[in-house]
Length: 368
Image (cartoon, rainbow, N blue to C red; front, side):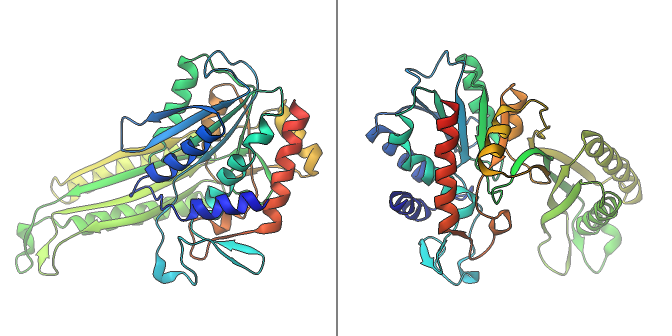
């Protein structure tokens, strides 16, 4: 446990938000794997500057593996806003039996536990694959590269645990996720002569208002819509020619996602006529598969028997759906509180950290 806290402290000190990149934390992980003589492969992403890592314990090589379990977590975090924190976000601070720091809950705690258990894992005659993805908080390209690598190298483990913060709930079903960027190109003009311009901010506001109405429509369905960022304009006396906004759908059903996109496309056509041919484009920035409950999930049954915890569905979206889509029996199971993720003063309870580490040992022992 002391070793886990030390590793977690060192991981927190490595800034790894999706904009600055995850090279430092990837180097740290690979150096640790090397010291423990664990085979691994760094997998650069073709779409961005990130990379992901896959490692094998008790596998002999990273190919032709048809059993075992995947333990998976992401290296990247969302950016911190230091002025909102009561403690330094990149210094692991222990107070009131909690560890504070950016990423401790989402989800460097899991990486710390995994790295701290490397020697423990070697005691079992059971293949354990470790996966560390580099861009879950942004593009989610890393998990695609991992799944492609596994398919190309005939790696087909039977089970997977995604260690996202779930407060020890066993998540067997969760929403899918799509992120979008909408851009509006209008026409700039002096604000004293509005008729010469096309105000892209006005158009963006109408589109966002339409999304808000759609969100209200699906409010009780498990599907959510959120607009998270908007950018546009130059000065108050210039009709803005370019505006963009970022938004997302977390869908309980694929049909909901399709309905929302169709509604936005129809409304976009309406605005293109109303504002005399602005250029409005929406492109998909990222997509995460939903996780569907498996009726014969061995891994969820094992965890439930050990923890005496119910299995449930969630509105979160994780990389679990990618493993499940590849035919792997997958659950999301971690400690920490999801409500701590992406917040100032993010923290994890030290006792919960120790309990989860012990449960993970029992799971691997049971499987082997």
